[in-house]
Length: 404
Image (cartoon, rainbow, N blue to C red):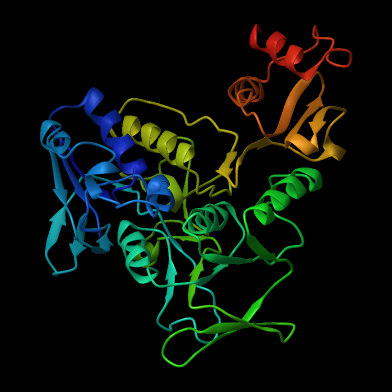
C-alpha cells in the first residue's frame, strides 16, 4: 500500500526529507504544507538580501518546477492547526481535514519576542522570514539610528549589513563579551574591535527595559536608567520551536518534540526534524543539522533503516571585514594541549584544542581556509599522534593534518 505522507513546514529539513523519500519511493503521496505564501527558500540569505532587492526566485531551495517533477503536492499559505493521532487526520486553518499514514513535523522555530514595555510600537521588527526582510527593507528607508537587541550571529550579521547602508547602528548585548559560547576572550576582542572600526556601537551587559515613543519608537531605556534615541529596532534574542499544534497530542514534548536516532517520535508513524525536533536533549537551530535530520527522517519514512549521527555544531560569521569559525569544545580546562597561532594586529587568531592526541575544538579568526580540514578532523576524531604539533608552524600542522 502506498503511503500518504504529510509534511508540516517547508524549510530545509522538509526539502531534505522529500529528497530522501523520492530516492526510494517515487509513488507515495507527499503533501507539503507551509504557512508562508512563498515557495521554500533559504533563510540564510535574508540578512544579506537587505542590501539588495530581495526576490523570492533568487533564494529558493529548489526551482518551482521541482515540486511537480517530484510529485509533491505543495500547499502555500496553508496553516495546519491540529493533528488527530487517533483518526490520523490533520486539520487545516479552514477546518478541512486531510488523512495521513505518516507525518513529518518540520515546523521550525520562531524568533522569541522580548518582553519589554513598548515592544509592539511601530518601527520594531525581527528577521526570520522573507516577509520580515521585506518589512524591514521598506520600513527603514528613512531610518537613521537603529538598535539591534541581541548580539548573537544573526544580530551581528544584521548590524553589519545595516552599517554598510550608512545607518547609525547600536547593538544591545546582555553579556560582557561577544559570542561567549563560541569564542574565547581574545577572539571576542578581535571581533569587538572590528565592529567598532565599522562604526557600530555595542552596549555590553545591557538590558533594554523600555521602548520609548508614542505610537512609533523614538528611543529606548536601559536597566541602568540611561536613555538613548533610535527610530528603528530589530530584535534577535533566540528562537523557540514551533510545537503549539502538538500540545494536545500524545507526542512527547520538552522544549521540542522528542525524537530518537531515526528521527521518530514516540508514535510509530510520526517523525520530526530540524528546529522543532529535540534529540538527546538538544535543539541546535542550525542549518546543517536540520538538513541532515531531514535526510534521516526521509529515509526512515520511506522504510530505509537509517541512523542519525551527531554532527558537531559549527558557527561561522563573515562580517565586519573578518571571517571566523568555531567548532567543538573550546574550554581550555577540557583540553590537554593547545595549539595557538596569533597575530592580533592582522586579525589572525588560530586556537586548536587537543585531548588524547585528537582535536576536540577549534577557533579560527581571519583566514578560515583551514576550517574544512579542522571540521573533518574533529568529526572523524582523527589521531594526530604522529604529528609533532608542538614544534611546527600552524600552517605546517594543517598541511600534515590534511594528509591524514
